[in-house]
Image 1 (cartoon, rainbow, N blue to C red):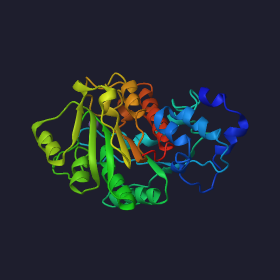
Image 2: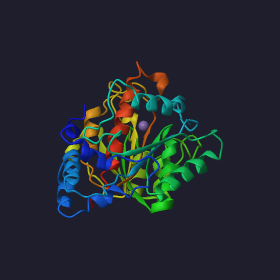
Image 3: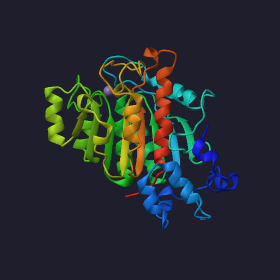
Length: 329
Ligand SMILES: [Mn+2]
């Protein structure tokens, strides 16, 4: 169970319990409160939050995280399937096999205001791009942290576009086996192999750090150099050495960053990947303000016993907890 929280008195916990329908200021304000600021930047979130609770502040608040499913995979280049992922990730997230406490001690049911907006109504036509962009823009403009459940990786392009519309250019931490930097993949500018080319050439991100890459060909090497992309190849991976961009930070997790042993439910099996723990180790180093995130490319048709859905849901839990961290820059 939520060990970090179990030591906290019920009265203290009640202070930060989200009130449905209440508009709450961002957690960032919390981390600016006097003596707690140093602690907020220093260690694990659970103890920091506990410290904040014990300051006696009466208006402690939480950032609102919005979950939105994007059931689309029409820009996949090899196999279809990720369109069915959002419902299964959501089901895994709410499963009784576990609780909803993150490893940092933040409990999604207690310490965060998590709004599940369901799936966006997409028809895989030309209008989908603007539907996704608008959804991301509205969430960001409302001060929420949107977490999107893919879908194929194409969705990251309109999502980041929408967040940049509201907040200006972001910085990106991206986990993937593939750089997704193709200028043109099989004639589809919206291909799931190209979103980061579109984002960088559109000036929607000022920094892109890619982690777990193990398929870099000559074209994508040229593209990475063109856009100044920082690549931590799977072959060189060390969690402590991954450069973490300063906020406002967007995090994109393609499930195929993982070795297929940990996540068989992906379209593109690429052996030699990261472990779940390695990705979590990088995430737990993030101190920047999170402005949005996605978990994409889960393909249920390739899964075994739903184990990849649970991995995807685990990342959603940890990303939502990170969103609570606010702006510690
Ligand atoms: Mn990939």
